[in-house]
Length: 306
Ligand code: NAD
Image 1 (cartoon, rainbow, N blue to C red):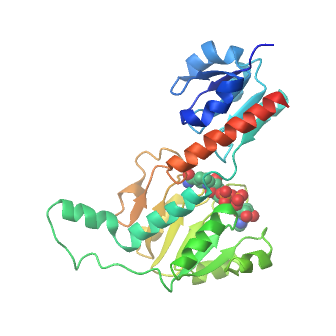
Image 2: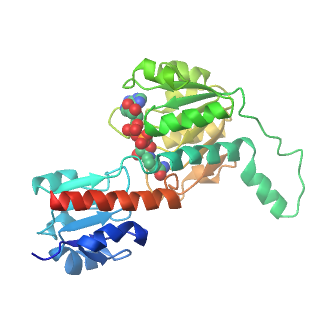
Image 3: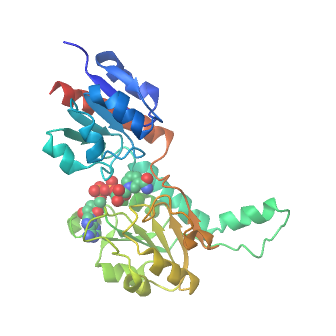
């Protein structure tokens, strides 16, 4: 029987896909627009692989009558209409752990940029100024890191925070306290964490329970001069309330990698000097992308053969 046709609709490192090339007919459709996908590529596809650009809607799934497998080369499957896929008996596979270290390192990229005033200091020097007194920083050593969510990424952040000499608090009702202690963190309630942390870093999924978990009230409980780092999912932090807290000077700064709407357009947050923001780059390293490509290739192949 003919080789299954696998449409790769987002850019993935080619060498990650050699496994699929050996067993399937691989169609490289990175950058293809939705119309081309629907009209030319999906009607004959047995499997579809995406990262996060392509939204796998019910409409897109309907254009692929032969589709048996959808692969997401990353963690979040919120760009896939799971209900529509399930209805058709389509298997959805993802890669859970490929971005973990990349995101954990990005937390410190954002945090160190904030506490050392890296972005404004570099801009000032680039403009020919030499303002050594204006950009006095703060050290992480001895500060308290509060992790909201202590899953894969939260745990990697905890290890790195300890290496910086930080005290680590963790709020995660689904992780046993013993496990939290084992990793050198102190299990606490959310209120305790907010009251004690110099840095609050968010690492939960976006669920009905975590939507606006960090709202005006939570931000008001944070220590004056504390920092917020958000690399999890837009919607967990109330952006309007965060803007208030930053402009009123209650928080010292925020490092943001994710937004309620992506791209965030003309969000006023992006104009604040004490905000360092990146366009959802937490998981975007060469290493993570290569791993994700290899891992999704294996999973899609297994699902096609299974
Ligand atoms: P994970 O599932 O390993 O960990 C999430 C943790 O959150 C779990 O331990 C869970 O118990 C906890 N949790 C769930 N609901 C909670 C609640 N109401 N209060 C407190 N804790 C709660 O996930 P992960 O791989 O560590 O990913 C964490 C977040 O990072 C996710 O939102 C994920 O989408 C995001 N992420 C972002 C990027 C990026 O590029 N910025 C990349 C990968 C993942």
